[in-house]
Length: 422
Image (tube, rainbow, N blue to C red; front, side):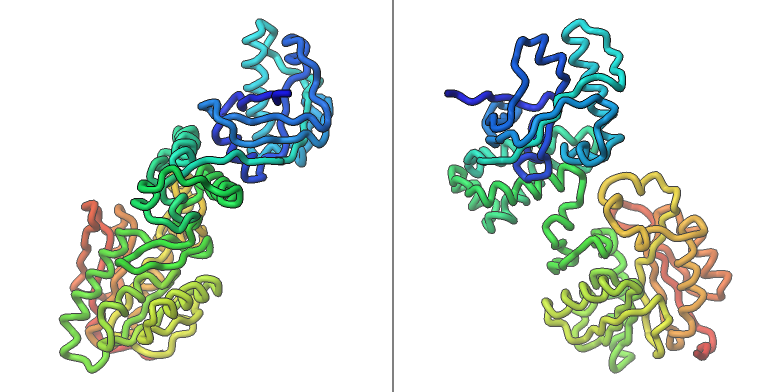
């Protein structure tokens, strides 16, 4: 006997992905709709085939339990089993869905707390095979369903990157062998990664790696994701170092708030035995990750250590660089894109985002040789305030440089006064 086949009423590809990933283990509908359609209620042991938006089979499920519950009696646990958020999210989504169904049946659209819900728990018994090309089509459609809520998604590119990561094949190889059939283990792994990306999680965290200055760097939610604009800070530091390298035997450079180690490791890669770099971070997980990146790149001219800014520093440097937190806690951009998933401690600073910038500017002279320089990345609208803080603290040769997008991004200055003491 043919099994019942159906697709979810909203976001069919995304919800099918959650099922395949094991993140959605329940579904629900209104009891009255079964009556109106003259269909029997589902029973334990029934098997169904879940389809995607193109009516292609994704998963076969088997019902483990079936309950009729009042809408108001759905618990947090039951809501979360549907994989779409907490109880409040469930209530909001299902209220809208049930109202839409009522409208289709010309029923009153008011859903009261005693509205009867058929709540079904299920398990996946089979994932249906897909070729590389079929999966890419499905994954692109899945991400496109969520793109309205997250404009930072790039469905085709992201789907390709996920498939490359799981199959360990290049984009060209995937294209050449497009009819290769994925294993069920690969399908489940892909579903898990695809669900994370559909929810907006950054690709760098999903893949565990991000390229910076052509260096492959491990990343994790303990650190910021290195961004191309920060390469401008690296360029300025390299230009300064190359001009000074003939004057000093070995240049000493300090990287404050190193995160993944991106800035320090890029400078170490380029400057080689001309420099000795100390890279510090307050967070132990960031220090561990930066050290892993240092070892993977085989760079012995960098020392990674834990320090809350200067607290564990006891030497002087020729150059200090930093990409500190500089976003105001009320900045609306914190609710958009990758930053939603990044550590707030690495993003947000007090005093309208200027607190850490000011702390570094005020304390850096203690740790600089005469004519040493400080280079700071900051927000695109913060250059005037940052320059003012430098001036108030008697720095000279203050200059702001733009990033690749034409925005003020890095301000640098030189300390020429008699060096302070520790």
